[in-house]
Every structure is written in C-alpha cells, then in structure tokens.
Length: 154
Image 1 (tube, rainbow, N blue to C red):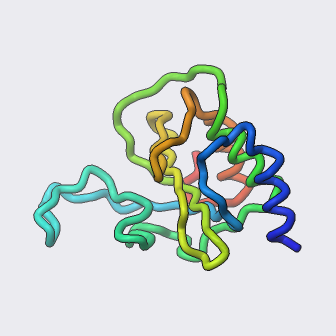
Image 2: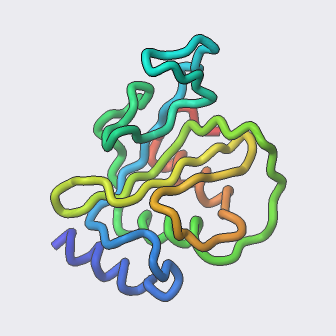
Image 3: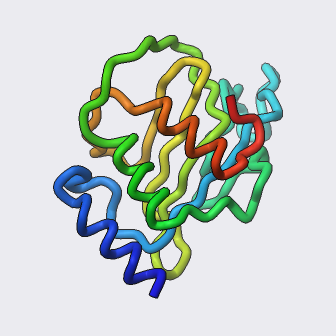
C-alpha cells in the first residue's frame, strides 16, 4: 500500500521533476559531517574538503542516523517540490559543508539518487546529474529536517 502511495505521489509530480530523480519507492533523510575532515591525507592520499553522504555505494562513516528518517508520501512531495522547479533566489556562499541529505531508494533498497544540503552556504549537490533547478527552497528543506528531527538542523 505504501509503495502505491509513493508511486501516486511520483506520478502527480512527474511534470515537475521530469527526469530527476529516477523511479524510487522510498526516501530517507540523514544527518552527517559532524566530524570535520582533517587536512591530513587519508589512506587513498586525498585531502577531504568534506565527507560526501555516499561513497562507493554506501553511506559514509560520518552519517549519524544510519537507519535514516523515512519520509511519508506528503513529505516526499514537499521535498521534491523544494528541490525541483523555480523558487525565489537566495544568497549563496562557497563553503559547501553539507550536514543533511536525502536518499531515494528503489524497491531493493538500493540508492538511485541523493541530494546533499548545506544550510550554511545555501547550496545543494545531487546525484545523478540531470536535476533541473535554479534555486532550491531552503526554507522548506529546513522545515523538513526539523520535522524529521534530523540532528544538527539549523
């Protein structure tokens, strides 16, 4: 039944979200990056500016709520509205130190898309490429993170 509700939500916003995200059955919110990367190279020789939400198909070590906060059909619709389409312009900085993300999963609970959010600079990054948006609705994203009780919410 829940999958049917999610599919109905997806269908109702398909005109808004065109090709991003790919088909999904579940969305979870995460809080991460409470640990600041060091300026020392890691085992691969990289110096990290930030830890991504996902790496090599898995949540990274800095994710606080490993199980994720599952979004309801209404919350999914509000998330998609906030990260697609046209929204009022807001200030942006260049820090990009994200602490919140949303992962879209398929029926096998494999990630098919995700978005990382930095409330400090007002920027987002998403995977896979192809999300068409000029501005995200940061106020709506803040409200969702608070509603989901994600740690470190502004």
